[in-house]
Each structure stands twice: as structure tokens, then as C-alpha cells.
Length: 90
Image (cartoon, rainbow, N blue to C red):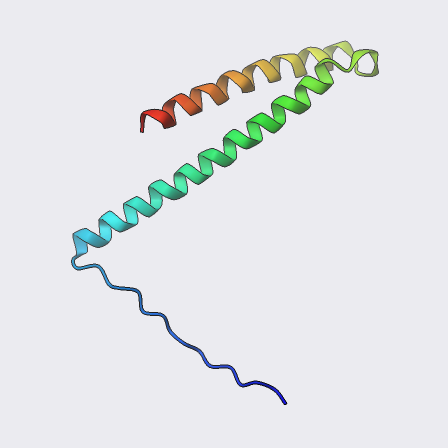
């Protein structure tokens, strides 16, 4: 026997006014923006770790690659701190 499925529409409480809806949408946009910045910070940190590994990888990597990786690591660390500082002010 198969169970029958029913669609149930959830009706969230509608905003009291258009201005309230605008505030809700702005709050949602800020929250999503924060998530996006958090994702960027996480990816910068991952890139920094990989760049550090390559920079310290010794002769297995060509000198030019090690140098670029070292600079990327330093730059991504600085950019990550800048992002954190900007978001902390918000």
C-alpha cells in the first residue's frame, strides 16, 4: 500500500506593512551577505594553508612557485584579517 501525500501550504505571518516587509528583506539580505563573507573567509584560510604547504615544500616545487605561494599566503592572511575587522564594525 502506498501512503497518499498531501500538500500543506505553510502561511507565514504576513508583514504588517510594506515598510515592515522591506525591513525583513533587508535583514535577510544582511544575513545572507554575512554567510557569503564567512564563506569567503573560510576559502581564504584554506588557500593560505595550501599556499603555506607549497611555500614550505622544498625542492619538490620550482622556486618561482614557492615564491608565489609564499606571497599568496601572506596576502590572503592580511585580507582575511581585513575582512574580519570590517565585519566586526557592522
